[in-house]
Every structure is written in C-alpha cells, then in structure tokens.
Amino acid sequence: MSVISNRHTVVNYVSQGAGATKALTGQRLVTACYRSKENGANRTNRAASIPMLSMVEIDSKMSVLKPLLVEYLESVQDKIFKSLLDANGIDGVVNEIADESINLDSCIAYLQDSASGERLTKESIGQWFTDSGLEDQLMLSLSTKLGISENPTDAESKKVELITNEYKAKLSAMAGGKTSYNEKMATSLQKALALIPEDSLAIKFNLRLANMIAASKEKADLFDLL
Image (cartoon, rainbow, N blue to C red; front, top):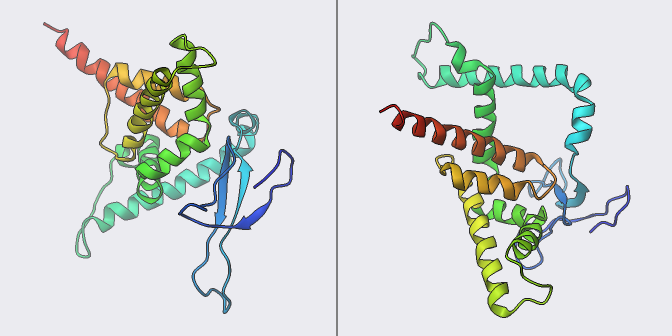
C-alpha cells in the first residue's frame, strides 16, 4: 500500500474478507468511512498505511502538547460529570462530586473504557498482533531462546507457533475489561510487548499489566501478614 517514503498511497478501503485492507508491518491503517450517501453524494471509503507516531517525538513536543492535553482532559472531566448526572435519571439529583470521580486516574479509566467499547475486540487485537510486527518478533525471540536453528524441524516450528498463539490469545483476551493475570503472566506479556516499538495500544496494555502486577503483589503482601 505504501513504500518507505514520506508519501503514502491512498486506496479504497475494504473492511473484511480475503481482500481486506491492511497496514504495512510497523504502521497503522488510517481510514475514512462514509455513510451510503453523505452531503448529497455517494463517497467511497478510503484508507492509507501510515507510520505510527513515535513516543520519542511525542516526548520532544511535550511542552507544546501539555496545555492541549490539559484542555482535552478537562473535556473528559465534563463527560464524566454528565455521565454521573445521567446515571441518576431525569429526576435524579446530584449535590456533590468526589475528587476520585474526576481526577486524572478517573479520566484515564474513562478513556480506556471508551476505547475498549468502541474499538477493541479479540479480532482487532489479533490483527494488531500481526500488523505491529509483534508476531514475527516474538517467534524470532522464542526461537533464539529455545536454541532453534535457522532451519527448524516441523516439531520445532509447531512449538514456537503454539507458544506465540498463546501470547496472542492472552493479549486478545484483554479486550474484556475484567481480564486479569497473575504477576508472572503479566510480566511475561510485558516482556513480549517490549519487542516492538511502543504504540498507543502497547502503552494501554502495559498500563493494565502494571496494574495487574501491583494488585498481585498487594494480595501477596496481605497473605504475608501472618
């Protein structure tokens, strides 16, 4: 869809099936989809494979981004406030709101829940697993750790494939907000994510995994009290 340059080909977007439009390895797919008739004319859905935003570049622009980020997070607080009012129904009355309902952690949680509800599915995570290059990098890393040569046997190839698919399944299961892993599993998934450049989804997974690890350690500490 695109070659290594600063120009990226725009093509007709096919959402599913054998001819589904996909991003190049290490890139993301940007899409523009239209209703059957918009502004009096039928428009074709279009897409392009573009480079992912670099976390290094984002960090370098943080002084400029901070006020914009604060403004955006304030809009999220507005949405949280409205959702709290709506939760009490048309005749419900809310006389106060607690800090923990609208602090930064609450804003992050709100954004994570919104992202999960709108975009994340097992299928979309599975597609990301391949498109991000994690599948290839994980198979390469596993082969190295298992001491498998460049010409693996069928049994060795099958073993690496099975382990890779298990990692894929564990990450895909995180489409569900209630999915939780113990410290060992969460740490293993973090190590896998470290094999690829950090993108928005990897950051989200790492944050959730870090919370799982913290919760697992807290439970362990409770049982160490006696």
